[in-house]
Image (cartoon, rainbow, N blue to C red; front, side, top):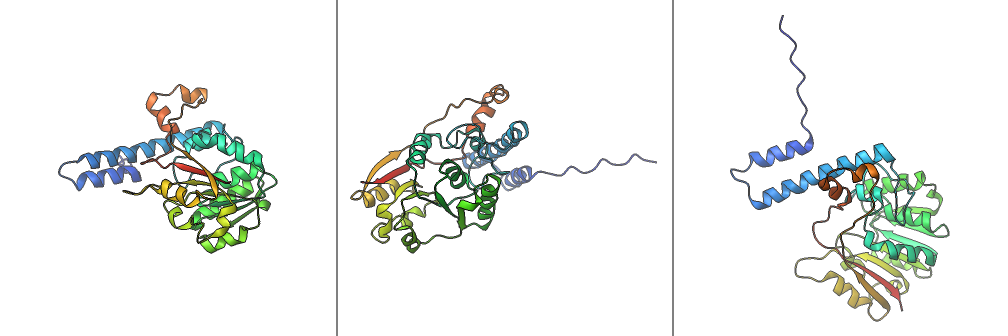
Length: 271
């Protein structure tokens, strides 16, 4: 009687994608290699995030949102830097300053899983938070995050936000936090939506080829707001001891936010 055959190994989705790419090419181009590198880097980043959760829990460890209980993954960008608390560290001083200001209302458009919406709800206990995202899955994750962090009674979650909806916030002292992957070019128009002239705005600008998105938006608000532009910088956060002991590449990937191009921010406050 012959020995039983070992069970067939199941390929991971990453392995399948790599094998399919290799099978479709007689020779790999630089673009192919760059795509593969990015895919593998994301895979390794996700493994590191899983290890952080397993060892330290799904809790933001530092930064302005320290103590925030996170969900199992991020809908956009790296999860590991969120867990470590170094995600978008360039904004930390602004977040601290704006949170201390004490707005009546926070409007977060493009809320994703709720990192900013729920983080700000925790930091600003007197504020009402309105979190919007066109993705139903992101809405569900944000709702769960609000419940897990005990702020669901102050967070209203909605879908697609349109320019005419700004009028609902015309009379409130509102902080607008916006990250909508290029849609800011259409939505941030104070000539069309006058309520924007009274809002404090923190927006991530997704630059398009041949277009200065940040410059174009800043020009629209120049007559009504004080404007600062914040660029990206490499982070050197203090890592947990166990993570600081890993090799250099893993430490880099633990702080990588998955960006492919620079996306500067504008902080615009009514003059």
